[in-house]
Length: 446
Ligand code: SDX
Image (cartoon, rainbow, N blue to C red):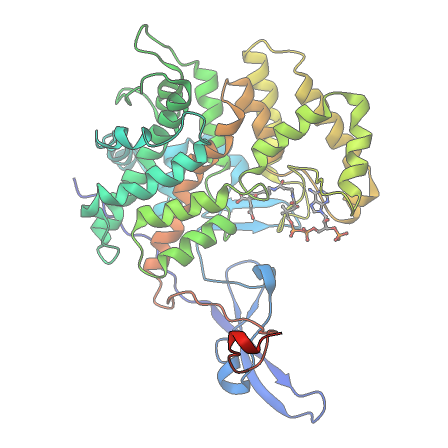
């Protein structure tokens, strides 16, 4: 089965003008730099010739104002709170699509027709099993190891088992690796859960849908049949759609940087998983639930918010704020609605954490500290409440995020390999350390 299809290739931004770098003392024009534009969003100044023309670099810690690449995959309008996957609004995909369709859209640029959908689903389904020897790798981990430690280790180790899809120069091998990673991530995440419980691994089933299969591997036991609730399977499918891709966020940029050296896809995704783990990024969903549990009750909310505002206190309102969104994260709106649906389905009507989260959001959004800084709920604020209600342990939340984001990482990694302008990523620095000085022998040191 030939899996390789055409991944839309970057076409190069369009030049619309130029800006001059002028010496403020002499008025001399040091450099003329092109201004580039895309199909939507901010124009950019092409600084690739700046150092050659002026000997200077740009300085941008955290890349807050830097475009690291051209991409056709995802677009965010932070001011409007808009998120588009290949131009389609996340709200429409959440309502009408499913995760594997979204995977096809992100990877190949279009929603699949019926034939393409069947082919893609089969391509993923028949890659969900792992090489049997990988089971033994789990035995090297403590039962109480954090699931993300297992995800980083096991996914990185896949390159030792699937060397036939590790040649990044071969489009067919990149396609097979893409299918393998999309397909095997739920299997690995579920195995990490079973490993922590001391329960036997549950094999994937080819008769189940993607999200249904994941929940079945998570919660089934060999002793009796297990039926996944269709409402929970749909909720999981929706959570995967909402987390699938998000422009050049920290973990995607990590995958691109690792990929720029020619590293194999499994190593690149393992690097992305490691970056996602951080509490400022994908680890925030776990941190939100921990925060809600620590707040514990309505009457503690105001005290916690005061701490989150206090510069001398390390606390932050987890699940709030975003580097790009200066409006409500559209994913959080959908997640909040899904919360109510899942809790209703489960017959959970007085979920205290949801009540605290809703009150916390209400109070924060009336508070000038958060309003003045454009701090709104992000994707992580409500997701943990849903996952917890579905019976997923808090320490596995970020692993679920990694399962979803694998398609985004793979789509961005694949796009990078088709981009003629891409080269190994190698940022520069502003050096403020010691200038050249000589070695001092030990007996002459102070
Ligand atoms: C994800 O990039 C992506 O797209 C990521 C993501 C994706 O899909 O890939 O959307 C997923 O990572 C969502 C974010 C999850 N993280 C959290 O919820 C952790 C809590 N949020 C913050 O740590 C913070 O908001 C960040 C890290 C998300 C964004 O930080 P920025 O853009 O670097 O903003 P900043 O740290 O410069 O903050 C600006 C101001 C500061 O105050 P002042 O110095 O101006 O007085 O806002 C304050 C910050 O102290 N601030 C917060 C806050 N977030 C920012 N104050 C209290 N609580 C917060 N959550």
